[in-house]
Image 1: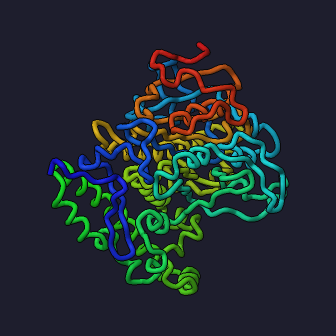
Image 2: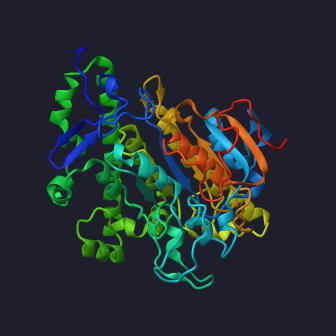
Length: 474
């Protein structure tokens, strides 16, 4: 039907559910339109997405910095899971966050990671950390998508006070701040994160019949109608998309059943399950038990990353953050071969060879999850390219070495080409103490939220789009 087109804002709808759609050929004349119908900044271009994946407790500094400069570089051991993605990443050396060069070892590093500001020391509710760069972007482009931004994580926020340093632990649980005093809550339950994207009626969602019904089943009639009206290529893309959503649903349902089976065999957990009734997220209120008892921390992580990928692919949101762990995270990584103990404890390695090896393996696990997310985005076709081509996916930590707590020479990687405006496949070394916020300026400019300065920035980080640039230090 050559003269028939649909808007990208079209949804598949059913009782208590809705599904945004990936870009179909039948949408291409409308690809430059936002939710309000206003033309995008670059007509005809695909939307740019931006995500930040934050890792607590730093890295093994001896197994991180690549060898070589520019395109001629070799990944260090801690980054080896990214080998197949070398052409899609930028690795930065000597960026730092001056605003976090004070206070305690952890909270200022996390709370100020995306704001570039120094958090206000407090043991109460009078928080102050600045506005994070992701929310600067969301304020400009969030009106073009159903969700202005999506905040995800794995650990619930701690609400107590760390008496060792005199900070409320809330600072360590948030990297996204919509105002200087307002952190954005992150969703740690895959089912609820999934519902936020695809369930349209909260009241009906809470009814058991609707909650247990597949989103795909709910919108099936609408999907069949649309399928009969689009071309063969769009049918294949639609089928692939629906199967991707169905796959995530199956994994969530399997995980919920496994938790129920676990509860039936444990009187203490059974009592808790009975107390919480049929709430599907009961077990995720204690995520430490998920990893320690079931060893499925990786699956929990990948469910959240898959949900974020679907959010980008369907243009349900263009801005997202994901926290692997909170400040001082004691996540037990004994499910990894050669690792015994918690993340924070191991990060205080005191240069002991055995602990450094465990630290490296924990870092490699995080990088493997980052690689999984990048591969997922790369597999999602969009026009002549893929979603990763039209994204900027930042990976980083607020400190370099968990033993030293230093915010200098931070472990920072950026993946994706931002619609062709980033020249990836390089390792770039800058002068010592180059502001991390210079990178944020470059990212915001590419997101359609241009700024001249952000926090302590001195301008846009040099060489981001120049494939011949090898860095400022030989």
